[in-house]
Length: 302
Image (cartoon, rainbow, N blue to C red; front, side, top):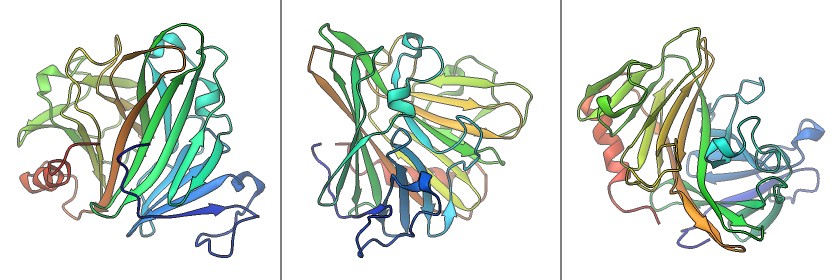
């Protein structure tokens, strides 16, 4: 993948790992496909054997991703959009199947099998950029079929619903369906204080290329392409927030542009992940928004 500044330690976490690996040996056989990536205080763990899923994202020893072991309730995964093409459950080759792994210096590449249904293959490249402290995840979708196909990339990241604060740059009255979640406008952004309700809820928004979440003294910021209103797949959006019923988990979702791929053609889409400590609590403050803007403003996503 192009334009990745890669200054990272990538270490294989399995029985055959080298002596230089700096993460623990697997506790169970199911951990045999796990890899780790670090950038300063931030570490990410990815499971190639389970859909190339991002299992963990930590600042030192503090975890930000959901670790609930219910089906579909932990870590971060990748789907193709629009969902109406596959409905439910997610495409097994992309979401749960084993990925082939290739290490190229500090780059970690994972590649899925071809989906029998969609005739596409997914790729994931992980690297670290010490210049801005981010972990860079670049996704690809390749049309392996014999006919053109329109598709968009879709990252789904699950965090715990324990009073966290979600915010992004979009007018509250543009979030749809309106009134489904209690978003409030403050400091020029839309803010949602995680709550508990006995129903599943999901909203869509046209943001400005970033999505942020803070809880338990951590701030997670994701930066991606800012889409114009006509670029998402039909019925989808640049930013989506899903809240599971009860106080269990939340999905922070972002999507790239809907594109037509000719046979053999690929698209590429990058998300930069930033994780840092933040002790301001779950308050929609000007200081918090400025902190995020300082992260997302200096340079465009490659």
